[in-house]
Image (cartoon, rainbow over all chains, first blue to last red; front, side, top):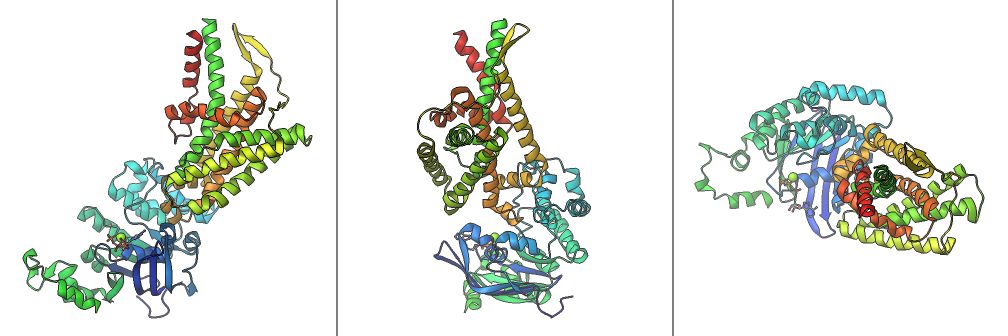
Length: 271
Length: 256
Ligand SMILES: Nc1ncnc2c1ncn2[C@@H]1O[C@H](COP(=O)(O)OP(=O)(O)OP(=O)(O)O)[C@@H](O)[C@H]1O
Ligand SMILES: [Mg+2]
């Protein structure tokens, strides 16, 4: 369904430096079209989270800065904007590691997501009902402190909270992290449903490449602060390198760890 | 027995006075993980400003003088957050803590140079009568401030539990970055917190000032509120209001 018009989100060759000296992103470009699910794959430390934070401008809160390149959302340049301004425009990051507010109840936590709606009580109430229809589990747990709910419920709470802010695009950072496979599937199903029914574009950073490629239309593979490979989800799933390094498969089937002699093959991408 | 209750009630009242100060500590600590050394100085400054508006430089009506005092504390909140603390965001909490030392000295210094160093009487027109109820002596003064403290605490609990901004402040105190990710700016939240702490400090300053006179020791009396905090929890707003401990403490003192 990705119309090849102007992308909703356009990241153009950005460079990110932390603490004025630590160069982490070395020219990352990617596009997400209206209503698309795109995924960002890569190993630990590849720069996935940094890319998402550069878009939402949460890098600033970690003493980081976008020093080169541009980020455009809906045709406007946004890389100089303050993070709350981006939230208002509908760019919502769901941070890695389920950052719920532990002393708040599930319902209060969800309501913080409506902060940028201002005093729109009616809209807030409707949004809350909508979140509860997508996540009936949260409705059951509405009065529990988020510090005491399960990991899966926390992830749902974090996504639901993002939904409260009228998102046009969600930047999801490893929603599968630390969850049982069944739960991961449940959460991905909901992400797809949000994408279809609420027309929310998704940029999904994942280490779980198999899952991400199953649900996304398009994928970007990152390594060492660069995008080294990109393509349609099917094309990527068929790519021999992706199969070997991210899906854990070889031509014969499951990979045996005895032949992990792939370092030089990794290198080839970086050239 | 009557004596016991009298001491208990007096103790309770003194406890309430301390918990007014403890409340200010708890607010700031919760919002920014900082122990605010300047809490007492804020009460002192509020007391001085009120004396200035009411007796020393101007003779405003009480309500206007109180309003102006809260205005002064709002300016302080702005300066503290946007001048002193802003460059220290994302630094270790110890640096913020040290900065509040600076704020304390700054407030004391400016207070001295504007209002002078001598202790000042503060009269807001509440009669200090004592009367007897069931054989126990109570002071109208104490009762008045107990009432004010109760209203203040109820108001704060309502604000934090039920309003959008209160919820946002609680979110910030749990996780700055996650709060930012839903569009709640840290500095704005801090500003609001310091304004509230300024209002609480004003109430404490008035309560202490009317009783003991507005004097510079007020800045340090605040630290005597620390036991309340440690018992009630440094980050707990309802916890700052467990004056019973203070009450029991004074019972023990007088009995021994
Ligand atoms: N605040 C920071 N200050 C300095 N360096 C940082 C900071 N955050 C991340 N980095 C560095 O940037 C690199 C990329 O980190 P990033 O978190 O973006 O990777 P990632 O792909 O999300 O990894 P993971 O899968 O482990 O989450 C890492 O080498 C990391 O050490
Ligand atoms: Mg990450």
